Length: 279
Length: 317
Ligand SMILES: Nc1ncnc2c1ncn2[C@@H]1O[C@H](COP(=O)(O)OP(=O)(O)O)[C@@H](O)[C@H]1O
Ligand SMILES: [Mg+2]
Image (cartoon, rainbow over all chains, first blue to last red; front, side):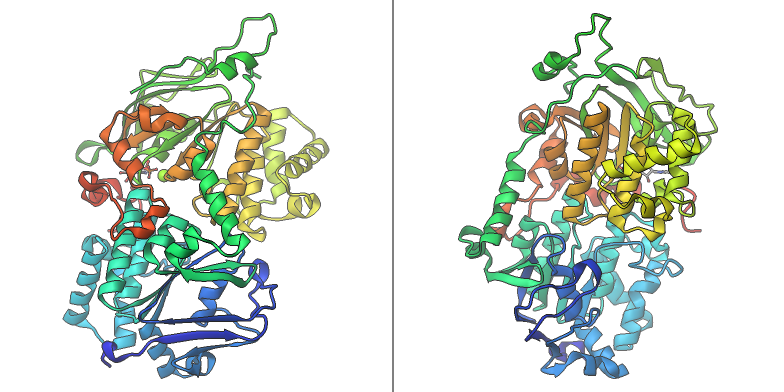
């Protein structure tokens, strides 16, 4: 199957309250309306627990939607995911990358194995062709091909996060969903990875949904910002407009908190520590 | 580089007037600390000639990229590195008035009274199979020679102090039965209950999401302040360091390239590396940029082979 021919269009229409699990459970009852196609560059921001990650996970079928429906190319996603070919088509078109955790990779398989497998399963590409595509993606993400022989525990967290991106991009998805993918990276590597994501998505017409608590990073990659609070979208609009002229008080408070944090240089405002003698 | 140790006015004013000889304002003095992993051809100097001092009650960040030697420096000070894997040497290593024994001949980790260390992953700091209560008992009975019952009561008090009010449940729980945020709190309480003078926290929030990490940083700040302990916080997160620390030590490839007051880092930083690093911290202006600034000549990837290699013993065959 030619990956270029895969249309990509994911939409979530909720007419009630989509529910997550546990602490991320949505309490809001407002409808949620959300769509991404290959022209999107959407940044989803909000505090922890606001439902950003839950929303991203719902869009890729990893989280149940209690009311409302997620569609893929206008067909309900669950129905799509029921068949093997449906799952395969969806995964070839829509890739999800989460924050690096110990469970991001199978600890018993090499990174090379992890990056090549989706190519074989989703596109039937193996052997030299697979090696070529893997090398391309590794070069893009500035990863050392020598690390393909390593196990996930044998590279740094920053490298593992980039391998997770490589594993997603290797199949040439039409839509890329990123959940806190730069949060654990060094500031220098963060810039590099954000530059790569932005440029790759723009030049290859890949739709991007970027979930992050980092406002600057999100503002950089996104043309449109979606602000979430307690499971609802409180505001959305062109990035600059939302930053300069927030319409919802919650957005304004997020921006104020961000500015306050940056204005505080050193803990001068925190209580003074008394010098204490040896115990 | 500034290693000036003059006390800020507010600390001088706060020094207790006991009539006795005031304690040395410096809690930890490190001079020319060097740590080498491996031997012979495989020898790799992870920390090279690091010198700095930490005052009582001060919060200091060690910042630097992955592989710059932050963790190694913390482990060496804490006494957790041993030969032959790692060889430590220092011209001076004085903690709370006593010289720390960290010579190259040491082959077993030592516990240093008054010093605790916590790690990024609470699971590394905690015993995965022991209940929280028994882990407290182990520390408290050792440090304060408390009976079982007294230790349990003391542990419950500590849990409340870190915001875990359901003490009965938490004390009976094993670490994996708690949420990530709760584990982190337990870890902080356990590290503080022995009343350390210095807490070394290695990336304590890197595995947590943003608002939880603020909570944990607030907690670390509060607990160390209440106990009058110093905090050496190892982090790659410059934003976090700006909000929570008095001074920052910048490590680049194992070398201390700057020691600055956090509030004046822009003016005080002398190393081009620190300046480049600061210029990489994105702001909302990023919304209008096509490319974010990166480290340029300090390309992290150029050093990747050396700097981001995994710990020895885990390398692929
Ligand atoms: N146990 C070890 N054996 C050999 N080399 C190590 C070990 N642990 C760390 N290193 C190396 O020492 C350097 C510093 O690592 P580390 O202290 O972990 O840096 P940081 O905490 O700043 O990421 C790196 O090059 C790393 O690969
Ligand atoms: Mg480290």
